[in-house]
Length: 173
Image: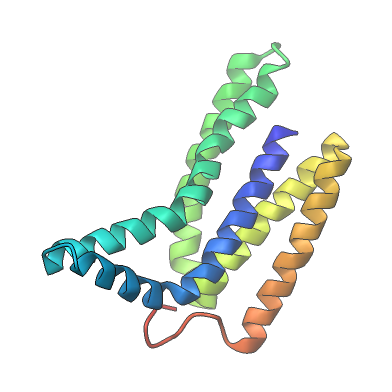
């Protein structure tokens, strides 16, 4: 059940970050101006960029970082064939990282752009949470995941109809 909650957390925080990135340029300018009062321009700009990047990425990155340990914990409850199961998880993680980077870099971004690709991949995490919750018969996670999937689909459709949330002049699409 913890793995399902973890996937739900990743999906929700990734959607939140994608939406918040629409305001990234204005936040960056405000933060840079704040840092400029304290010293050198280069340091102020780099400090603002680092602060924004860390603030936005820490939540989904944390969720992604605990996904493998949560999966190992789930299979660790059944000690039979533990080494094979852990090896399978690590192999799946490695292959997923390789193929995920290839598919995202050469297909998704090309077909949908960065913003929509992030939303589609977030929807994948939410769908994984919902699937895990159904398989594990975890009602709370089913309801939460179902709601999150509904919100994600609505957001994705809204973004597609609106032409995106991000300012195309300031952010790479």
